[in-house]
Length: 241
Ligand code: SAH
Image (cartoon, rainbow, N blue to C red; front, side, top):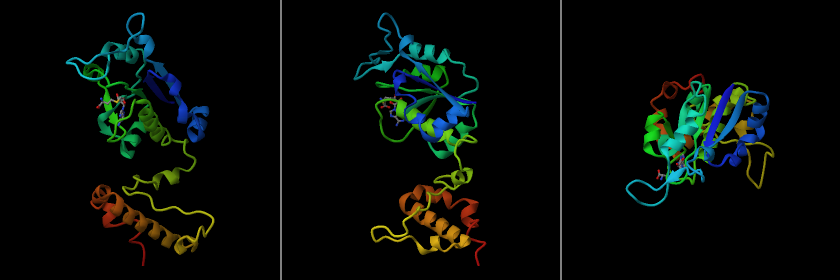
């Protein structure tokens, strides 16, 4: 069973959004489990201090390496990657989420204050992962976002496996626009082709829309996609006519 362990100063933040909907159902079905490890009891002295002023001076506080290591070492790693959520890390994307979904679980260290002493990142071989180019107040939300992206990929968690493979990023493109009932809403109709029942035309429309949207919004993704074999001979396009 996939196991996510969160090392945090705020265990009360969990499970939070991980405790609803498909992730909650999957957890009850035993497809994954979650534990929190409170960093505070590993702190130093009567006050269980976990942080100190930065060497060299400057603003804020830094999490102590000895305290962080004690919390990390209290866990059975069991082949799980040890991740430090950090704006300096490797940016999280769908491919990385897929890689993590192959693992027996994750250990996620949630930073606070100015972050974690560099020596424990090195000494415990932590992998730094970032949610994006912005700064959060702590690693908890980032750890939850990563866990949600990974757990929904585990076999049996998402109801419809096919819907996963057609999603944004899975094909290298953003997803096509979606429509549902009513067929007309506030004067806006539904593209005629989607009501045609012609599966081949629908596939083609979705593929072309996805390409156009990606080209417009994410030229970086489009450039990478244009180098793939699917772009040269698209599965849905070349069988047409
Ligand atoms: N001084 C640090 C930011 C500290 S923010 C710097 O400039 O890099 C406090 C904590 O929030 C970090 O230790 C990290 O765990 C978390 N955090 C902040 N932004 C994040 C992001 N974009 N991705 C992942 N974790 C983040």
